[in-house]
Length: 165
Image (cartoon, rainbow, N blue to C red; front, side, top):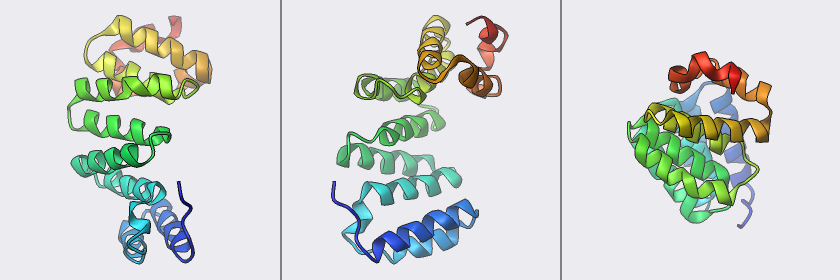
């Protein structure tokens, strides 16, 4: 993947800073300054995805993440964000199916099995959700996953049993 060049790297950095400050309009203004070639770079698309997420524009978020996966299959966030957007669009079955290939591509990424646990739980496939949560725990640590899971609405159907996993 080619690196961004100056001044595009500065515009992207500024956009990320505006997002962190909660000022999306300023971030959009910085992204508008990018060269046409830079606009399809996965780093730029990731910032665009963050803006879509911030504004709950889930169809746009799905499309942006899909472009990331097409351009850079080795970027786990593209896979994760694409499925997250599908889930937010209430297309959880598709979200799960779209994320399954990422398990083999990114075997040490604990977010992937965690999200698959969330999707399985929402689809009322609790035995599958338990398996995915155990895998996430093996990758990221039991305490880390439990801390996240205790407040995750998607795992609410399993809340009572989290401590015994």
